[in-house]
Length: 330
Image (cartoon, rainbow, N blue to C red; front, top):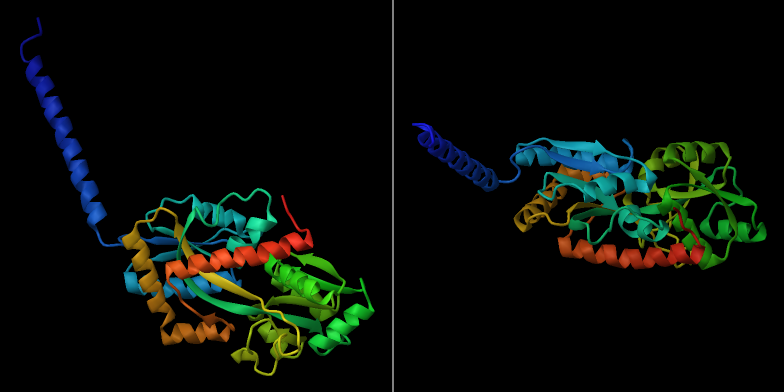
């Protein structure tokens, strides 16, 4: 027989267990009902500090922190052309407390460039909003004979395989590959790990020309240490109104580096809607527009659907450039 009083103890244990479960359920429900965000948010930047993605992220995070009353922590995860940080963002818990910067390289170029990509740019992400874009700019060493886009093309054609171009990242290199496919020029590629060392060698004449985003080289262009030949946008940019577009030079070329925000794919719809609304609000702030404008960025916030459409069309366009150039990476 069971000793006297043991049954009562067992009953009490069961009651205590169910009470604990009930409290946990209540606590979970209360947490879920709290307005988003109720704790700090992590913003992954898949590139090093001080670059375009990082600068934009820090401007955005400061304003979002003010709106939300919660800290937005910028988390730099550089490496592998943005693949390391983007993979971390794809695998994050889809609760809205981890979001990420992304753009042309991570969501349009890398899927074609890498045989084994550790994430799916469509299936693994929920687009939040496009931030904006900055055109690539064709630049030359100041001692280089060509002073215009057409002079550069003519010189490169007259000297096949003798003109070197630098690139820091996949987007600038593919911009030159696009120009090569349009014009038939034969130039020699010199890769760099960052815009700063590439600019240093361009200034020193170690390479003759290069494509890159305007923001990284604007001080050198304005000081006369680098010559700007042409911008890749459809119209001239406000920060360099005296520099013509490649289209003005008769070259049917357009290439811009765009910046956007993404969340993990299964993020709740109300959270995604709030992220979009608040980021669009930040992008409408006068001081934010001024600071981003000084970088040469054209601000073009979007709906999630519009960003998804951009990712799809850009992947098709730049995937073709990658395949036509025969470029793949492991």
